[in-house]
Length: 291
Image (cartoon, rainbow, N blue to C red; front, side):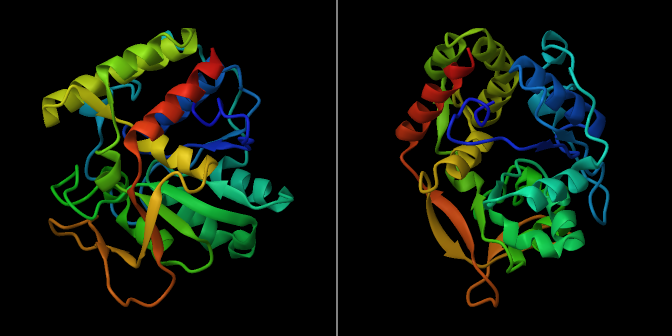
């Protein structure tokens, strides 16, 4: 919704992937959000329904509700268009092949689709300006103690994306997103931004309650929105170049993102600093444009 509300970017496609809830749900939810914003003309591609190698260990219904939208899915309009028959990887490949300027990809879930795109269509890597991924953590994780959920859901895909050298990658980790938390007053202001913003605020309500219970803070981290904002306004987040490897073993550290000094290859630009109040104000200024 933040991307759709921002006039300086053109949302060329939306793709879905398994994650907080199964693929069927994430695809339906994406269609509902596009319909809510009256943007069902944006192509929607169905992506991977499982990780590259090992089964996904856990989902996030406790955080986002059984429907993935905080129990509000049925309150949103039904999807107004069928998904693109090319699927996520085919759709992204078509968009890139037709692009006349570099395209930014903003994965805010497991990186399975992106790993597949880079593997199947290496010739299209020069068409990608950069990848801005929400995920990872250099400190405490939110899944299994040391891993962040998106990376933990498919560590092999994340390792493939973070260690490749063809496309610049920016990683927006929990280290920063947990510092950019929206207060109850911020959420109330969002709800007052129009009917679409009011619906978004209600969707966030379930996560807000779960976040308050887990962390003891009456606020909610805007994890994905930070990555989207950085993609649209490069330099919003302050990054540090670090070689990032992902633990792909099957032990308790699975999914951990680790900075490896002097590792070969291109570094990942890890977003570790920002002005939280400026970021929150910018997001809140954009979303009401949806009405």
